Length: 181
Image: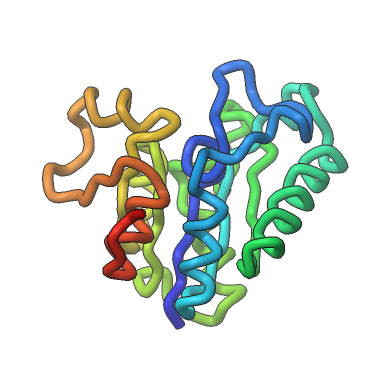
């Protein structure tokens, strides 16, 4: 199995420091849906691991989160793509759960769901905590510049050998050996 675990906000869709609270605020980053569809069509299994503390903060509820994910599924289906599994953490950092990235809980849950060991997956993220979760389970990691990506890169806390891509579409192009049009 070729498993790619994507962060959501900042990798697939636009991010906001004010949180993505409604379906209308869930706006795909240009090219991300098409990139996911191309990866899926090339035989990759796609999953998502996303921190969603807006639930604990009362900004939105699980029904709204599910509606955002339904929008994602619909857009992907229109392009011939599919996300097979979505894991989310609804907790605050202060809850000290095991699922909130940088903890590896969601990645472990996804690996267990697919019956693989976590180091067989690749994580694509935009923040230090995405890399920390991947490193905790020995998964490969790719950084994008979208979302919090530029800020994360400027902090200089990521290892220098991590592959960096402008966005999810550039990652897919590199992985699939295609040249963007």
